[in-house]
Image (cartoon, rainbow, N blue to C red; front, side):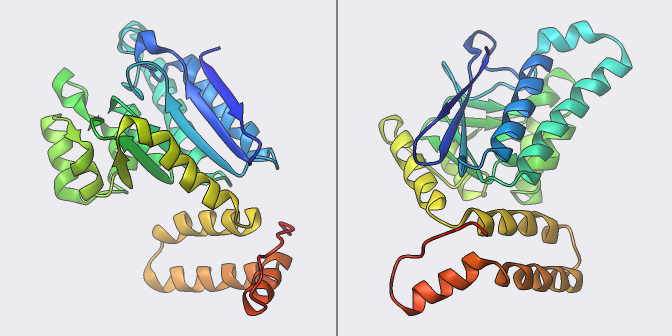
Amino acid sequence: MNIKVQNLSNGISFITINEPKTYNSLSFKNLNDLIKVFKKLDKDNKTKVIIIEGAGKGFSAGHNLKEVKNLKVRNKYQKLFNLCSKLMLQIVEGRKPVIAKVHGAAYAAGCQLVASCDLAYSTNDALFATPGVNIGLFCSTPMVAVSRKINRKPMMKMLLTGEPIKASYAKEIGLINDYFSKSKLNMEVLKVAKKIASKSNLTIKIGKQAFYKQLEMPLKKAYAFTSKMMTFNMMAMDAKEGISAFLEKRKPKWKNK
């Protein structure tokens, strides 16, 4: 199987795109398998945080161009790009926080995948690009995810030139949270994942869903919506437990209710 899943005992699940020979391309098969895996982990109560990575030399080079070239007809192209969008929406709309752990290159739809994750960390030498313009295929779907993480001018430069950017610049413009040496990346990503996993699952689920919804709303509607969400959150047992634990200077005991 090209998509491997490893469930750790602390509620952290690793998804590995394991197709190094195509640079972990987002082919029809890999997209379908990733959607199935994300849906399964999203329903799994033991999974609290998901980490996605690529095997071999890098994270993902995006779509499999050999496959794309052989599609030839409009409805097959549409099906591929719709399927890719479905994966990205599954990550954003899913209940579990998703962390991209990146090494090597994250190009085109691979860069889109990084941008779609809630958090992203990479090696010092990782590269990110939306290089479709170089082959006459503008990175229109990748730009949806990336443009929601970075500002317009750096986004347009990436799209119009197709040039890759380094990890240091990717952090500067907000595409990734941070970068580390190869030897430290896994440890640092796990550190963040463990910290998130120690929180109330219910609270994280409510917060993640509210975060992305309010971003698309006008300011007044966003405040009205998030006020409702905070009220809903406040009625949960975990909110009452968390406040009590804080006031009593003890660790909270989450029930995820």
